[in-house]
Structure formats: C-alpha cells, structure tokens
Image 1: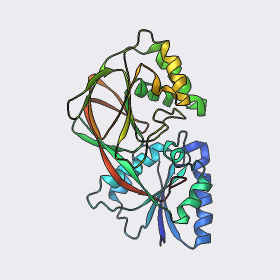
Image 2 (image 1 turned 90 degrees about the vertical axis):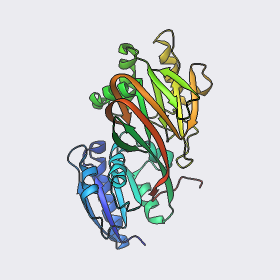
Image 3 (image 1 turned 180 degrees about the vertical axis):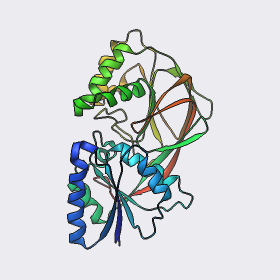
Length: 302
C-alpha cells in the first residue's frame, strides 16, 4: 500500500494548472490518509538534480505534476541514480502537450489522481540516448532536423498556447535550410539521409501530431518516421496536415520503421529534441530499455 508520496511540482506548467492539480492531490491524499512531501522546481534541471541527491527513504511513489518535460526530468533523475530505486511514478498532466497521458486516455489531473489510487499499474519503456559521450533518457520522442527546429521556435511562441507548435511549424518550414542527417540501423543493413527524423514511443507528440498512431508504450520498440527528400518545401504543408490526422502512413514520401536501436550523425553540431528538451549533437545512438519505469496508471482497455 502506498503511504507516502514525493510530489515534484513544476509551478509554471499550464499557466497555473500545476498548482491547481497539487491542490486536488492534497485534498485526496488527506481523505485517503496518506502523507506527502512537495519539491517545487524553479528552473530546468532542478528535478533531475533533486532526485539524484534525495535519499528517497520512505518514499513509496513519486508524482510528477507538469508536462512531458517535467516527467522527462523525473525519469532522468531516477535512472541516473546508482541505487536504481524502482519507485513507481504517477503523472498529473498539467503541461501543453501531455503526450504520455493522452496515450493513457487520461488527460485531466482529476482523472489521473483517481487512477493513481485505484491501484492498477503498467510499465513504460524508456529509451537511452548516448550522444557525444553523454547519456540522456526519454519516454516520448527523439527527433532531429525539422522537428527539433520546430520545437526551438515553439519555445519562443508560448503566447500562442495550444497552437504554438502549429505556428512554429509554419514559420520553420518557410525558413528551413536542409542539412542532411544520416540515419543508420544498428545492424548496418539500412541507412537514410533526411532532414525530418522522429522516433516516437507515444502515439502523439507536441500538441497533437499523431506521428506514430500505432505506437505502444511497452513493446520495446520505437516507431520511426523518416521523411525522404522532397522537391519543394511547400509540399510539407500537406504532409503536416496528414500528421495532424495520423493519415501519413501511406504517403510515398515517408519511411516507417519499428526498431529497438539506431544511430544518427549530424553534418554539424545541430539540435536534437528529446521529450521537448533541446540539445546539440554530432553523433548519437538510441536504444530501448523495456519496462524501465513503473506507472501508477493503466491504459484504458488494458
């Protein structure tokens, strides 16, 4: 039985939604007779550092209140520990995208709180990204080229709120200069050159791009989208519309693969997007870590 929770709160998520979710959780925890402690992040990376240094003694579960970026920090903080605590994680979705919880059919904090205390659990695959000698973990997506550039622009367009990724995509497509990223399967049997590479563990990315409509959270594989070279950038707009609907899989411009590991090299030190967080890289390898995180949630229908 879960008796004590550690709550990681991003107070800036969802323009106050995170704090509202915390109030809901506190009320339910009081009613259930369980205790909790709260760590409030102030800046990016705070949750990673805290979870690496905190003893976690007596903690039965961790609750992440925020978006996909907040959960990414919780995952990294746990998996970078030497003691591998294996503490289950609950999520109160309060961010812009909330891709994981959309896949769990649990997009509201009140639903997520009920789910946490029901007792049903599931396991979440995590991927490890080794780039230029550093290790990072993710659970949602990893992408380079246009996807990373769009995310970079979207961070500056937060005032568009739920439409910021769509507006950022429009601006980025109009201004993007192709570079040519090299994608290799780990066995060396296939290689591609592309400026739009996304590997997704969730069906949704951003604020609703259904880039991997058949992705599963616990199959040990990433669903990979690679865009072939195209004659004119304006044709990307029709593809983007298909991505919003999840109807791109029959498009002749798209290469789809399901893999547990792969490599990418960049023509120069360029942006990489991991769960919405931005990095720069030259060479990287991605490999799956099946069932690495236990979730206090269960997908609808399981």
